[in-house]
Image (tube, rainbow, N blue to C red; front, top):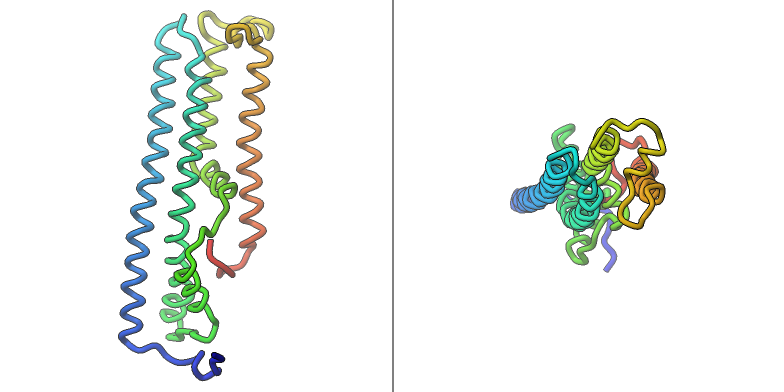
Length: 225
């Protein structure tokens, strides 16, 4: 059925505005719940890193290996948090969509702007729920927000452990030798660590470029996500 222009420009009734307000409140509540879950996963990563730091620096003879192994757990927490972020982003995007297309215009000049078609896109998102960001983008955003700092602390602690324990390092060769893990040479371990750091940083940069291309300098978003 083809809707005419007058139908597209119709005004909302008080009941419809009230229903939309309750819908917005519900989406805010859901986004708050998932925001709390994101913080919980970050806390797990921080606590795990703290335990690894305590073990590695418990004594001069303690091995730096816990600081390497904790990277696997942090990576797991990052993947879990990125998955949670995709759910959180659904509710957050819907809230922002209503705020920027309904509440903000109404507060600014009293214009509901029903003719822009924003309500149709919102309705489609309810008819066919979908993620608004890819898993790759969500991982990059979580790295930028939290995990890059966790990575820097982990890397600085590991390098510091090799430098000062059991005695202050005297030359580069001694530093590389201390990075040995069983039969694995220290040079390979350090190279893997450098790749680990650069991969995270590159992922975060790629995500930042993606968001910049999508949003640019526009004040209002052209889509959800």
